[in-house]
Amino acid sequence: MNRHPGRLTVTEGTDPIVELAMIDAGGPAGIFLDRLGPLGW
Image 1: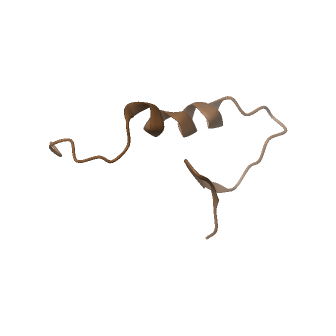
Image 2: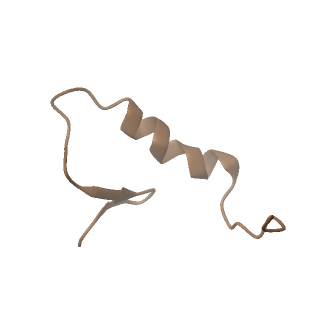
């Protein structure tokens, strides 16, 4: 559909998802993150 114009590899795109899924119950909550870290809002 998008003719594959993405700038990230599959690994770069999935790394933050896996990292967030692995956070334990004491980890951060209620924050916005991208692959480079926390984002201000």
